Length: 78
Image 1 (cartoon, one colour):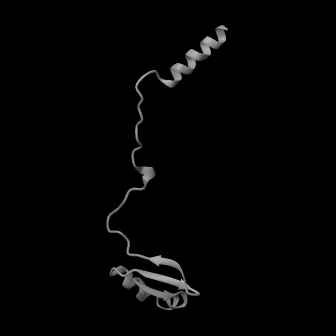
Image 2 (cartoon, rainbow, N blue to C red):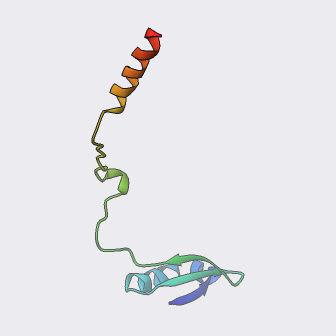
Image 3 (cartoon, rainbow, N blue to C red):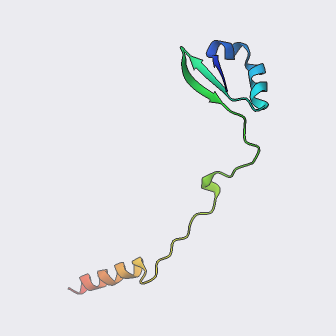
């Protein structure tokens, strides 16, 4: 892992990104405090979670909609 100042990053961005491409992790500092961590991109293509199929939930027993309709019928009779 290599720490560099923001000014140095601006001056040498191309060579620093070459280092990152070769597997180096770079931490950019501003006034001595880390503001960014540059890591190599992963080689595998990941699918965003919102594009993955969702979980299907199932519950044994009466369906909620049927229970609500039945309750409404009971209330309307009273």
